[in-house]
Image (cartoon, rainbow, N blue to C red):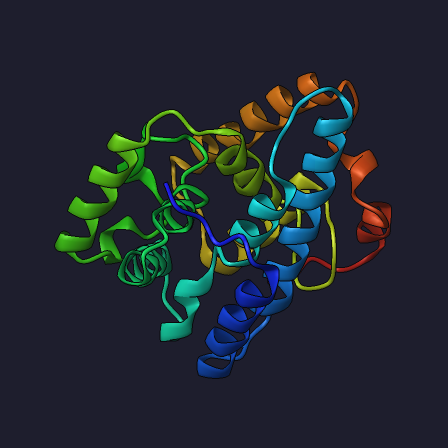
Length: 213
């Protein structure tokens, strides 16, 4: 799979997307990229050999589908996938989808506001997730970091999930997605031999701020 490796090019793309639809998603994306970078660097210190630049750029661009404007549910993931497929970066395209599904290809139809997603998008998203049912390290780290960063900086998983739930609502199946994040967190912390929060500078400050809703 082809990924964007040039950081300058990655910033050109996200800045273009932001010019199309300004919003807090831009700073959120930068913080997701920083968190991803920190985790991959630490994993490499533990003996692994991951491409930190690849992960940073993919994280930076995971929400590029927002360029089309505000969309509820996972429609922005579909838009991002189509965008990257058109310009030839399949790896980045897949990250646009996987970050919205922490349970991987399980419980796909339980995604928030799934009923709002057009049928042709549902079919394509299900196809993509089934074809990529085993997430690699980049997809796992970015999926988790998406839930550890907001526009203000780094935050705890619990606070971020509650914030999203207050803003977008929850369903009877929301806990399934929350469990997906914790499964990834536990796996990565096992590889790191430390809490993920030790790699997120200033994360403790988030406990003193209000929850966005």
